[in-house]
Length: 508
Image (cartoon, rainbow, N blue to C red; front, side, top):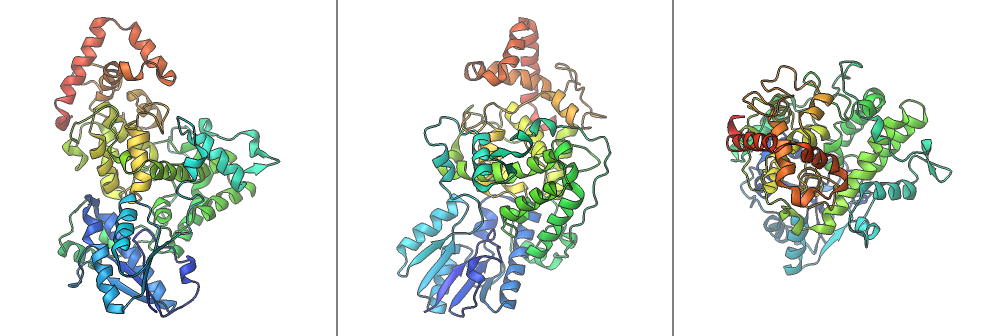
């Protein structure tokens, strides 16, 4: 009796119960396929890091004595589709069954399920043993509610898992310290050193290029900085807890041209490919608080991103797919400007955030939401195109976590299921939280004129053109009260300014 066990590129959990015992009748299969590199245009580092981590996983499994079949990107026998390759291996190994861990992406879940139904041998799905919640748990929690508020979900998780709790109350008698975590960074404290291990993956990168795989962004193949195994990820976690978490809370929303990492963990890649579990990361942060090493606001803010937001977003995804992927509440249709692929725009904030994304395959949540996403929504860019760009450019972007964040939180394309209001701002917010406006060609205070910051006219134009849809939203009433105080000429002027910019997005 031989069983093929499939491991996807984001299922690199060496602690999974599958690997507890060595059994030569179990063949572990990992494959580098064009199906996965080509469904969207990906950042070079994303392809490279996943393949390198998969190869390291195969090495670890072999060292433990497991049977491994690894299919490389340039293998002549590679059919570049997961089901087709599995069918060949079924024959090759005379397999009696196929097992796979629950995919996190709807498209893969459907592909494997549907193919398994047509197979002459049983296909069985097992749990990935990673998340706090099961796929449908968020839907159960929100049953009968019109709006899925993350804060409600987060409090349920805190109580259920007894995280930062004491005497049936949250520690500090407060659930959420978000209001305290909004400081701009002025250079002090100093950004911690980047302790990530660098890997020379030049040979692997050349094989990816030779195989014809298209990508964008900087590969950094001779010094790839992303963790490739659990040991490296744990070292990165400890470095974050020791050096960065104490200041994470204060500056988690800050942006600066001189410090792209600031105090962020950069652990999302390791978490999303399952080298680390959310449980151990959350418990480590809580332990640091209880030991007096980090402030409560810092620990709570970090834990909320994982125990709250990450699990909540997954629940939104599984409850609403596949229809969610086509949501477009405002019916926005504009193409992405060309500078999304180059970073070459005169807007300093967007130039920095996009260039950083292209160079590092990473940007933190405020850069994604309040710079790139903010502009995309104000400019009426097609949310599906924005989603595909985010899915491709970021090292940690897998559809289950990226799609609701982009379409729901960033682009309000779901009409408010996830977010209580569109997250948009003029230049004021960006200037408050960063140094991006300093030295920019555009004037952060001007609404109209050749030197006016595009965010300003686009901000007011967004609210004016969406008055029917948004004016009754209680969370954005202030914007409409200000619009009511504007005379007709002022409104016409910023509308004309906005239209001029929208007609010439590529040259902004």
